[in-house]
Length: 272
Image (tube, rainbow, N blue to C red; front, side, top):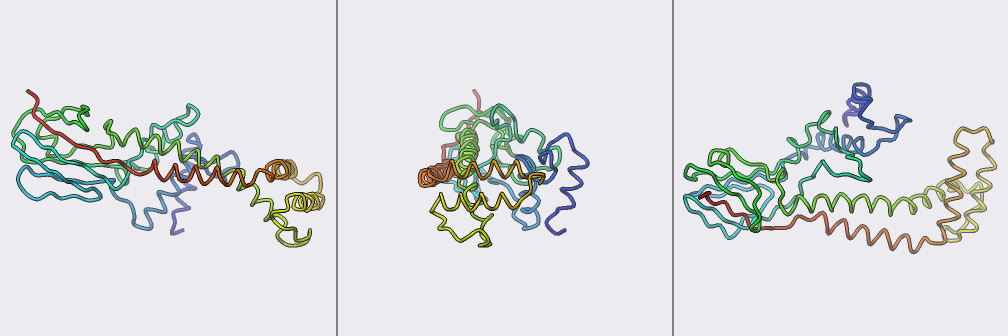
Protein backbone atom coordinates (compact mmCIF):
# COMPACT_ATOMS: atom_id res chain seq x y z
CA UNK A 1 0.00 0.00 0.00
CA UNK A 2 1.03 3.67 0.07
CA UNK A 3 3.16 3.22 3.20
CA UNK A 4 5.25 0.52 1.59
CA UNK A 5 3.90 -2.55 3.41
CA UNK A 6 4.32 -4.79 0.35
CA UNK A 7 7.97 -3.72 0.38
CA UNK A 8 8.22 -4.98 3.96
CA UNK A 9 6.76 -8.34 2.92
CA UNK A 10 9.22 -8.58 0.03
CA UNK A 11 12.10 -7.73 2.35
CA UNK A 12 11.06 -10.46 4.80
CA UNK A 13 10.98 -13.03 2.01
CA UNK A 14 14.22 -11.87 0.40
CA UNK A 15 16.20 -11.45 3.65
CA UNK A 16 14.92 -13.99 6.21
CA UNK A 17 18.41 -14.06 7.73
CA UNK A 18 18.30 -10.37 8.72
CA UNK A 19 15.68 -10.87 11.45
CA UNK A 20 13.59 -7.82 10.67
CA UNK A 21 10.75 -9.37 12.68
CA UNK A 22 10.42 -11.79 15.55
CA UNK A 23 9.66 -15.47 15.10
CA UNK A 24 5.96 -14.70 14.63
CA UNK A 25 6.85 -12.62 11.51
CA UNK A 26 4.45 -9.96 12.80
CA UNK A 27 6.24 -7.89 15.43
CA UNK A 28 9.25 -5.95 14.06
CA UNK A 29 12.48 -5.88 16.03
CA UNK A 30 15.21 -3.23 15.91
CA UNK A 31 16.09 -3.16 12.20
CA UNK A 32 12.48 -3.89 11.25
CA UNK A 33 11.21 -0.87 13.16
CA UNK A 34 13.90 1.27 11.53
CA UNK A 35 13.00 0.07 8.02
CA UNK A 36 9.29 0.74 8.56
CA UNK A 37 10.04 4.24 9.87
CA UNK A 38 12.28 4.92 6.88
CA UNK A 39 9.69 3.74 4.36
CA UNK A 40 7.08 5.97 5.98
CA UNK A 41 9.55 8.88 5.93
CA UNK A 42 10.07 8.21 2.22
CA UNK A 43 6.35 8.45 1.55
CA UNK A 44 6.03 11.62 3.62
CA UNK A 45 8.90 13.20 1.71
CA UNK A 46 10.99 13.92 4.80
CA UNK A 47 14.19 12.12 3.83
CA UNK A 48 17.23 14.30 3.46
CA UNK A 49 20.75 14.92 4.73
CA UNK A 50 21.79 15.59 8.30
CA UNK A 51 23.54 18.66 6.91
CA UNK A 52 24.93 19.97 3.62
CA UNK A 53 27.41 22.83 3.85
CA UNK A 54 29.56 24.49 1.19
CA UNK A 55 32.16 27.04 2.27
CA UNK A 56 34.08 28.87 -0.44
CA UNK A 57 37.38 30.47 0.52
CA UNK A 58 35.94 33.55 -1.17
CA UNK A 59 32.20 33.77 -1.67
CA UNK A 60 28.92 33.05 0.02
CA UNK A 61 28.40 30.11 2.38
CA UNK A 62 25.61 27.71 1.43
CA UNK A 63 24.23 25.70 4.33
CA UNK A 64 21.29 23.38 4.94
CA UNK A 65 20.40 22.22 8.46
CA UNK A 66 23.49 23.76 10.07
CA UNK A 67 24.56 27.23 11.21
CA UNK A 68 28.02 28.57 10.39
CA UNK A 69 29.47 31.40 12.42
CA UNK A 70 32.83 33.05 13.11
CA UNK A 71 34.09 32.15 9.64
CA UNK A 72 37.75 32.93 8.88
CA UNK A 73 39.19 32.02 5.49
CA UNK A 74 42.57 32.09 3.79
CA UNK A 75 43.93 30.21 0.74
CA UNK A 76 45.48 27.60 3.05
CA UNK A 77 43.28 27.74 6.16
CA UNK A 78 39.58 27.85 7.09
CA UNK A 79 38.03 28.01 10.54
CA UNK A 80 34.42 28.35 11.70
CA UNK A 81 31.92 27.37 14.36
CA UNK A 82 29.70 24.52 13.18
CA UNK A 83 26.23 24.05 14.70
CA UNK A 84 24.17 21.26 13.10
CA UNK A 85 20.44 21.00 13.67
CA UNK A 86 20.39 17.21 13.40
CA UNK A 87 22.33 14.29 14.77
CA UNK A 88 23.77 11.65 12.46
CA UNK A 89 23.25 8.04 13.54
CA UNK A 90 26.15 5.69 14.14
CA UNK A 91 24.84 2.37 12.81
CA UNK A 92 27.63 0.48 14.55
CA UNK A 93 25.86 0.99 17.90
CA UNK A 94 25.69 -2.16 20.02
CA UNK A 95 22.93 -3.02 22.47
CA UNK A 96 23.90 -5.87 24.80
CA UNK A 97 26.97 -6.43 22.59
CA UNK A 98 24.83 -6.90 19.46
CA UNK A 99 25.05 -4.60 16.41
CA UNK A 100 21.31 -4.15 16.06
CA UNK A 101 21.52 -2.24 12.75
CA UNK A 102 24.42 -4.20 11.28
CA UNK A 103 22.62 -5.22 8.07
CA UNK A 104 20.31 -2.23 7.60
CA UNK A 105 22.25 -0.89 4.62
CA UNK A 106 21.72 -4.23 2.87
CA UNK A 107 18.05 -3.46 2.41
CA UNK A 108 17.78 0.33 2.62
CA UNK A 109 20.31 3.04 1.64
CA UNK A 110 19.87 4.79 4.98
CA UNK A 111 23.15 6.66 5.01
CA UNK A 112 22.82 8.11 1.53
CA UNK A 113 19.18 9.06 1.96
CA UNK A 114 19.08 10.32 5.56
CA UNK A 115 22.43 10.26 7.34
CA UNK A 116 24.96 12.07 5.16
CA UNK A 117 26.61 15.14 6.75
CA UNK A 118 28.50 16.81 3.91
CA UNK A 119 31.07 19.55 4.31
CA UNK A 120 32.64 21.09 1.18
CA UNK A 121 35.39 23.68 1.20
CA UNK A 122 36.24 25.11 -2.19
CA UNK A 123 38.99 27.39 -3.41
CA UNK A 124 41.77 26.06 -1.20
CA UNK A 125 45.24 25.97 -2.72
CA UNK A 126 46.46 22.50 -3.71
CA UNK A 127 47.85 20.26 -0.99
CA UNK A 128 46.98 18.11 2.01
CA UNK A 129 44.84 19.51 4.83
CA UNK A 130 44.25 18.49 8.42
CA UNK A 131 40.60 18.70 9.49
CA UNK A 132 40.09 19.19 13.23
CA UNK A 133 37.10 19.45 15.57
CA UNK A 134 37.81 21.51 18.69
CA UNK A 135 41.49 20.86 18.07
CA UNK A 136 41.19 17.06 17.68
CA UNK A 137 42.25 15.62 14.33
CA UNK A 138 39.39 14.09 12.34
CA UNK A 139 41.41 13.23 9.24
CA UNK A 140 43.69 14.47 6.49
CA UNK A 141 42.30 15.22 3.03
CA UNK A 142 43.60 16.88 -0.11
CA UNK A 143 42.07 20.05 -1.49
CA UNK A 144 40.20 18.15 -4.22
CA UNK A 145 38.55 15.85 -1.66
CA UNK A 146 37.46 18.83 0.41
CA UNK A 147 36.02 20.51 -2.67
CA UNK A 148 34.05 17.34 -3.52
CA UNK A 149 32.86 17.07 0.08
CA UNK A 150 33.75 14.98 3.12
CA UNK A 151 31.16 13.18 5.23
CA UNK A 152 31.35 14.35 8.84
CA UNK A 153 28.92 11.60 9.88
CA UNK A 154 31.68 9.04 9.27
CA UNK A 155 34.33 10.91 11.27
CA UNK A 156 34.91 10.95 15.01
CA UNK A 157 33.33 14.35 15.62
CA UNK A 158 31.93 15.31 19.04
CA UNK A 159 28.50 14.37 17.68
CA UNK A 160 29.46 10.84 16.72
CA UNK A 161 29.99 9.97 20.39
CA UNK A 162 26.81 11.87 21.20
CA UNK A 163 24.80 9.79 18.72
CA UNK A 164 25.91 6.61 20.47
CA UNK A 165 24.84 8.06 23.82
CA UNK A 166 21.51 9.13 22.29
CA UNK A 167 20.86 5.61 21.03
CA UNK A 168 21.68 4.16 24.45
CA UNK A 169 19.31 6.70 26.02
CA UNK A 170 16.61 5.71 23.52
CA UNK A 171 17.04 2.09 24.61
CA UNK A 172 16.84 3.13 28.26
CA UNK A 173 13.63 5.05 27.52
CA UNK A 174 12.18 1.98 25.81
CA UNK A 175 13.02 -0.17 28.82
CA UNK A 176 11.56 2.41 31.21
CA UNK A 177 8.32 2.43 29.20
CA UNK A 178 7.83 -1.35 29.09
CA UNK A 179 6.29 -1.81 32.55
CA UNK A 180 3.94 1.22 32.35
CA UNK A 181 2.84 -0.05 28.92
CA UNK A 182 2.03 -3.38 30.53
CA UNK A 183 -0.26 -1.65 33.02
CA UNK A 184 -2.11 0.14 30.23
CA UNK A 185 -2.40 -3.12 28.30
CA UNK A 186 -4.08 -4.82 31.25
CA UNK A 187 -6.53 -1.98 31.82
CA UNK A 188 -7.53 -2.20 28.17
CA UNK A 189 -8.27 -5.92 28.56
CA UNK A 190 -11.11 -5.11 30.96
CA UNK A 191 -12.23 -1.86 29.34
CA UNK A 192 -15.48 -3.40 28.04
CA UNK A 193 -16.98 -3.24 31.54
CA UNK A 194 -17.91 -6.92 31.48
CA UNK A 195 -15.73 -7.50 34.53
CA UNK A 196 -16.78 -4.36 36.38
CA UNK A 197 -15.48 -0.82 36.14
CA UNK A 198 -12.73 -0.59 38.74
CA UNK A 199 -10.86 2.64 39.27
CA UNK A 200 -7.64 2.30 37.18
CA UNK A 201 -5.68 3.38 40.24
CA UNK A 202 -7.26 0.66 42.42
CA UNK A 203 -4.68 -1.98 41.63
CA UNK A 204 -6.31 -4.75 43.64
CA UNK A 205 -9.71 -4.22 42.00
CA UNK A 206 -8.15 -4.19 38.53
CA UNK A 207 -6.25 -7.39 39.39
CA UNK A 208 -9.48 -9.10 40.44
CA UNK A 209 -11.15 -8.06 37.18
CA UNK A 210 -8.20 -9.43 35.24
CA UNK A 211 -8.54 -12.75 37.04
CA UNK A 212 -12.18 -12.92 35.86
CA UNK A 213 -11.02 -12.07 32.34
CA UNK A 214 -8.55 -14.95 32.41
CA UNK A 215 -11.21 -17.39 33.64
CA UNK A 216 -13.23 -16.55 30.53
CA UNK A 217 -10.41 -17.93 28.37
CA UNK A 218 -10.08 -21.70 28.30
CA UNK A 219 -6.84 -23.40 29.43
CA UNK A 220 -6.15 -24.58 25.87
CA UNK A 221 -6.26 -21.01 24.50
CA UNK A 222 -2.92 -20.57 22.63
CA UNK A 223 -2.16 -17.26 24.37
CA UNK A 224 -3.18 -18.35 27.86
CA UNK A 225 0.39 -18.67 29.11
CA UNK A 226 1.40 -15.29 27.71
CA UNK A 227 -1.54 -13.41 29.20
CA UNK A 228 -1.19 -15.19 32.52
CA UNK A 229 2.30 -13.70 32.67
CA UNK A 230 0.93 -10.30 31.62
CA UNK A 231 -1.64 -10.35 34.43
CA UNK A 232 0.88 -11.54 37.02
CA UNK A 233 3.25 -8.76 35.98
CA UNK A 234 0.44 -6.26 36.45
CA UNK A 235 -0.12 -7.39 40.03
CA UNK A 236 3.60 -7.17 40.73
CA UNK A 237 4.27 -3.82 39.04
CA UNK A 238 1.10 -1.80 39.61
CA UNK A 239 1.92 -0.82 43.23
CA UNK A 240 5.11 0.85 41.92
CA UNK A 241 3.30 2.77 39.16
CA UNK A 242 4.16 6.24 40.44
CA UNK A 243 7.85 5.40 40.67
CA UNK A 244 7.81 3.85 37.19
CA UNK A 245 6.18 6.95 35.72
CA UNK A 246 8.83 9.13 37.36
CA UNK A 247 11.57 6.91 35.89
CA UNK A 248 9.95 7.22 32.47
CA UNK A 249 9.84 11.03 32.67
CA UNK A 250 13.52 11.12 33.67
CA UNK A 251 14.46 8.78 30.82
CA UNK A 252 12.50 10.92 28.35
CA UNK A 253 14.25 14.10 29.43
CA UNK A 254 17.63 12.39 29.20
CA UNK A 255 16.84 11.21 25.67
CA UNK A 256 15.78 14.70 24.59
CA UNK A 257 19.00 16.13 25.99
CA UNK A 258 21.30 13.52 24.46
CA UNK A 259 19.62 13.70 21.03
CA UNK A 260 20.54 17.37 20.62
CA UNK A 261 23.73 17.83 18.58
CA UNK A 262 26.50 20.01 19.99
CA UNK A 263 28.36 22.77 18.17
CA UNK A 264 32.12 22.73 17.74
CA UNK A 265 34.91 24.62 16.01
CA UNK A 266 36.14 23.20 12.70
CA UNK A 267 39.67 24.05 11.63
CA UNK A 268 41.00 23.10 8.20
CA UNK A 269 44.65 23.95 7.72
CA UNK A 270 47.33 22.93 5.28
CA UNK A 271 49.66 20.20 6.44
CA UNK A 272 53.22 21.50 6.67
